[in-house]
Length: 495
Ligand code: F6R
Image (cartoon, rainbow, N blue to C red; front, side, top):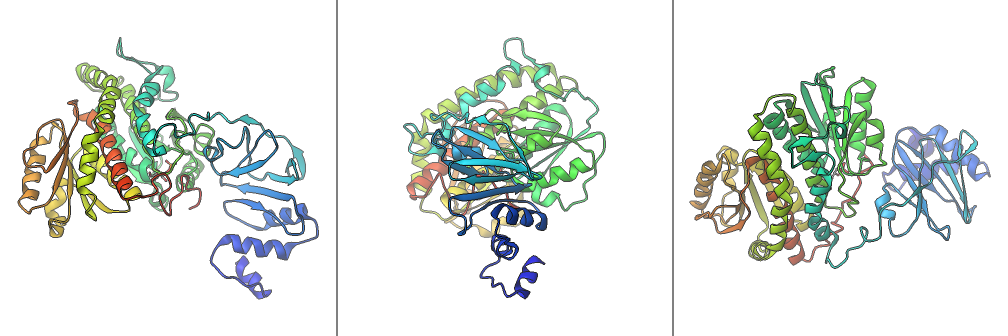
């Protein structure tokens, strides 16, 4: 609409972006006063935006405005100014930061700034940049991704601290704010990408451990479905950044319908945690680079705790509950073991790096991990991978069979071990290459990455890390830009 109006005034457009419309609109609205022009602009445009505006006529000045989209303003001791949608990106540059509110107009002149809302000067809370430089540096690691993968054992311990007591096997009710409501009969998880994949795994945990009906939805799709809201349903929003536009959009829709909402978010000062009723922070620390690894494990750990907490009031046997906690305490050591024996994973990476297409075929608890592993793998290696529950193989995908299509099966010694072995035999009969991750020797597999034995619910923690590492080493052999994969951004703040 605005574009059409501008075209009628002979403005020319060279692309399809809204930014180009805004730049031309600013020119059209120009009054000679920079601040006044920007004010006219914000009164005219609709929808979510975060804009930084400079004008050739006002050198040394900049204006920032936002509505709906995140915008962090930060500065260092020399009053150099920085902007980002996510504070993580500013660590190492700025010391102080301010989260701008919707409708704020920030005006920079030289080394000074002022913020106005409705033409009145206001001051917003100034925060310290709390991401320490160690967290924001690679240390001795070749890539941030490898560093963040290696942090996972410590993160799991941190998540459990104060929330669970492994000695007397109790959960601290205070830590699960809001979840005292026993009337929830259904849980719906909403997220995107890796966070959605964590949500799918959570549905298994919720149903298996808490006996609660649950489903997971991709935010960008869910928004257009008929969403049934009632008093017995809890909507859980999962997000590392807390700023993902697709998730925020569904959240706002649900809030307008008085839905019960809960967050599982990593970045503390973020839109999703603000808009949601209550929740859990995942305590993964700053996840700085694009491919999500430690955030996934942290999300999965948090919901495992939540499921166990809910269980206490519901159904599982005490023996099973105790066993899950015992094994959860061992998970950091299991992951440490994988990190320490990473040569076995590097060896497999060297063998598979020559292929272009991969199948990820897993069952039950491993299906969401397959989904996540396939995403991680394609994201940083740029190789094609598909995932299927193994049982689906004969319903179509077998048509793709040839010896150039390696298949990855996670075959821990769980409930479905025997079924997985028959899948492997079916695949080997067609001469596929088979890579497995297991605590058992798999005679028919070409390569097996060994992990420790645990219980069914805990294998996903371990298998996910194995595949993070395998994706990492394969991408490294291919010389990919691992920390900044092409075409991707850390926070997806536009729809
Ligand atoms: C993949 C990845 C993305 C994010 C997705 C949601 O490695 O990082 O798929 O998981 O963009 O982001 P958050 O969790 O910040 O809502």
